[in-house]
Amino acid sequence: MSGQDLIYGGRFQAASLFFSRLAERFPGDPAGPALAASALIWEGAALPDDGFQADSVDALLGEAAARAERCVAGATTDSARVVGLFWLGTALGYRARQSDLHGHVWRATREAHAMHDVLERALALDSTCVDCQLGLAIYDYALARASALARLVARIVGLGSGNAASAVARMRRVEEVGILARYEAQWLYANALVREGGSDVLLRMEARRLVDDLATRFPGNPVFRRFLDSTPASP
Image 1 (cartoon, rainbow, N blue to C red):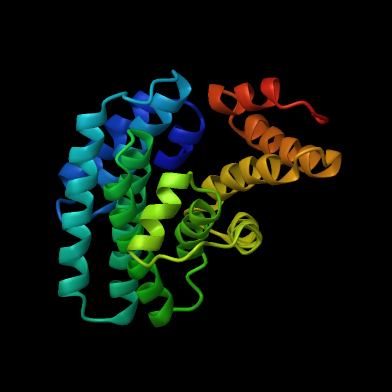
Image 2 (tube, rainbow, N blue to C red):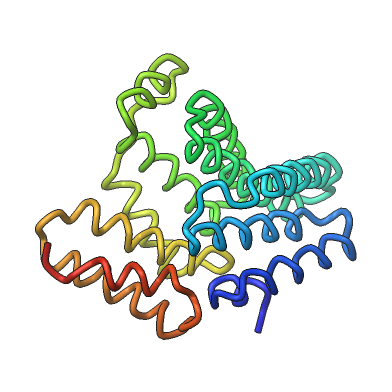
């Protein structure tokens, strides 16, 4: 079982330990601290506890971002630069998510904007980086479905208004052909379908199918089971 499979399989503490050790073994690689933070975020979602290990998550994401920036600065090839940009975008995206979760709208906006710019740079270097599309999809969807305050902040700093349909289509593409972000995209795509679908039974059934697939593949993850228990096929 891979480290990411430990996360999706609900073995969050084992995943956190796995990636913490990976971060120690490869001190220049941003993947270790970024995924260790992801494990804690998923564990918080499972409890559920929005403040779970918030300081540790913030520290891990700060370390991941710093490592990724060094990777980008020291890259000698475009492929190495894209890898660094992907992990920098990942860390910034998680930081935006954490800031938004804790009500820090301005910080969330800054982090999301930085993530957007970083991932656009990655795609300009390598248009085949499908995993990079997920962060951009989340950015676009968040702008489209943000609170009134968040929309105001977005307008003030010139971030635009977002496009939900385009964002959902991007999520679907990553869910279909992504590599590192495929299961994350499947989960987010299913949640977006429920929100966008309203009373559309077919969309809700598709969302349940996607999450049922995740729950079958990873039966130990309570987040997937909770979704299925709380999301009937029809509203």
